[in-house]
Image (cartoon, rainbow over all chains, first blue to last red; front, side, top):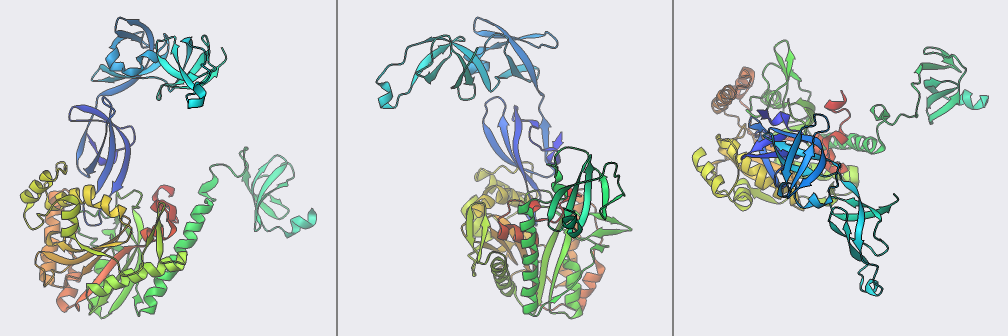
Length: 188
Length: 391
């Protein structure tokens, strides 16, 4: 068990059956009262953030969670197969566990897989990925006047993102996975 | 060049090949140094301290010795604030006293942890016991500006070693001490900032007296939705549950109270545009305060908050030796129940109360927090000459 003096950023704890990580904490102590640690936790399953005031002397249960770097191998139906490059151990993760970003994953990309009680519960992509445009229409003149200076482009993984009008099929794009947003065109 | 050097007063900090770094009255500079000079050698009258490890000068991590400008400015402001505090009390006829920092019996309060000082001594958590003995000894207006020590308190508003301004007025009530407090803060703000205002984040807070007042009962009812402050633990726990306040495993009355206070009242105090004086504390949070003769259930105690910063805690002092001993014994039981060191009752303090202390009121105000407010510092570490982490 952890006590309040163990609280620091990144500490993983179990509350109400869910794993949480500490994202912020502050020592609070009324002059005549007990000390509290005002702590913000992020739910590792839902991403939701909760704040709790943990009184000195209270205990926190450690969460059995582990972050592993794994390589995306291939898609199998609605499932995605990953491999630990150190042990060659493979895991299969459903698209719904990965979330909306599964269509930004290209073969062989390295991602962070979160395990909770030995079970994979989440996948975090690198902040930026490079993906090639497989389909986009030419820029339509006249649209810019309405402030519409982007157009949709389909990427090699199937994702569709908004890109500037000068982007052509075959271009290699840097994509911010957190925003699902075009960053820039890169050579290659 | 030789003439310039002759005028330099300072010392050589480092040597690196042909160059040497010099710290002079006028600032740091680099001069040519004869090859082969080693630590202890004299170069143009300057002693070589040690060979330079190479790389940038000053080193990027050199703020251990060279404090950043903002910290130096804050510390200069701290010195002005301290001088203003002393002048304030001197002008009002207070005697500044020195208290021992190593004592046999540190504060017995359940939520304060004293630091052991060896030889059966502890460092004081507050100068209160010794100052009350001085009140009994016949001094009527006393102030101490002294270091206090509280184990385990580290945060944006806490350092385990900090400075307390503590003052007592004999033959006076809590209102007189509240007036002192308001005027003191306004005076220090004027001395440091030239205006009766303090700075918290991007907010400027007017500290012109008098400050708004509110009772603890009203603050708890308004902001925490809890009004059962006269009942027992079970009743308070039910009120917290009804208000949707998570008190964790808290069972003791004061832990329940502070769970509600910290989660619901403090955030509201932080948002206020003016200081707030919280008055009329429940008897259970009485500590060393006397019961309020007109209002049953509360003690003569106030705390002043500025933008959520708890600046001070004041009492109409408990001077009844029998009740004082009973409260100390209760504190000792609580400490034992929580597995904390159980310090002896200060018999000399009790003896002083038995001989008689005039009706008195006193306040303990954190100098570091006052300096934070008048300099706009976000952390107590920014206004400390040395922080615990820098030792």
